[in-house]
Length: 124
Image 1 (cartoon, rainbow, N blue to C red):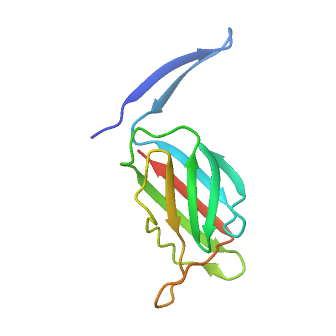
Image 2: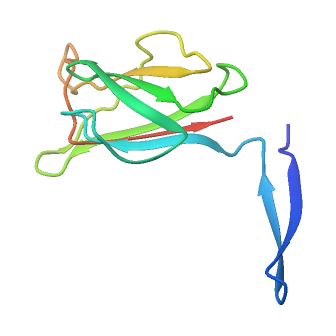
């Protein structure tokens, strides 16, 4: 299903421009945070990150999404040791107000780990 395109014209009294935005299918929330502390570096529509334990995080949305049927893209790594396997396995079923994720190593069996850099994007 294609997204909905909304077009608006903005003006400063002298100049005007047409702005188009794709509502459906666009990013609804994103966050870049420190996995060791849960401290947010930058975000959009994310009010907080809760560190539940090693490699286990809950991302809390500022404004709830329409439902829990969204797609998630995740990356995690450490500048000094390289990327981790970012098994974005949901630790719990996602909800419209929060998402719980787990970061694990590539060891067998996988072990929860705190990545220095964690980036998560949510699309709907």
